[in-house]
Image (tube, rainbow, N blue to C red):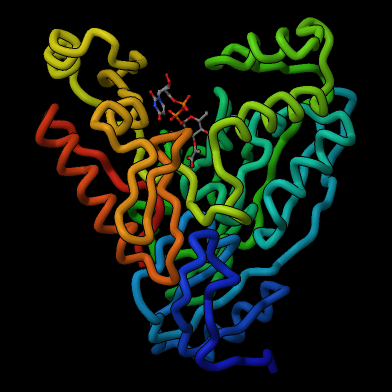
Length: 337
Ligand code: EPU
């Protein structure tokens, strides 16, 4: 029997440090345990918690919260060129990155220092500095909630997109991710051409023609920490909004009044830097009750309270202000529960 706990504070389990309670709480370390607990609580609402780093809890959870601690990192296949890894969903993402860069494997270094668990990574296709999880992911293994059967989603079936996957759409709330398979390269595959990375690397004395994944990790962490607050000190969920994609016509209209708008051409339109939009509206460093816009990155909201009310009010103010000024809709990126 898996030990259950009742009326448990979820504060230690979410990086926004929201202090709400779960009616029932348990931790599972194997797929069997997960299936058992799901079988015996079929009628409860369910919340699967990984690292809780992309989650805004807005009230007590009147159901079952399962903390996924299904761990393990196994090398399934190793050739001269690459390794194939099987990783339990409950592993901490950045511990995995540390282990892989330490062995000289390339692929995860640009995704250094992202909070959260391995199992949460495919849901939003985590990305940073020109790399997304989809670039290394081979498959995702799940337990399907309707019948507790095990399934495999190939990379194509995951339908990855910018901060998006099938697990946020058609399969939302239908699958529990229990493992992922990743292919990493043993030969250098450096991606340094995003934003300020190469410039920072040179400035900090690295030789960009000859870098190990550990070097890249150091540069990424240094770059990230200049802007992004550490959730251990300033509770946050990373970017609170997605970078919106607008039509070319809408972009041209915005550029005619705001020639400095930061934008990236996409196949289906133009992606705008949400941080820039929010910053332009004067929100950087702005406080509302116990919520605050981070003073070095306008895309990050910091929570100083024990609930998420002020954070949500501030988020809605930001959305309204960007909508009123440019007609652009900012989509909230973390899950609201
Ligand atoms: N900008 C401002 N003011 C700000 C913030 C940004 O003017 O307060 C401008 C910057 O000058 C820059 C542009 O906006 O020209 C883009 O900013 P940045 O490079 O900081 O990246 P981002 O688009 O804000 C995205 C991801 C981050 C990821 C970084 C690096 C999203 C929503 N966010 O941020 O991901 O770490 O790129 O790749 O796509 C996350 O998903 O939680 C996250 C942190």
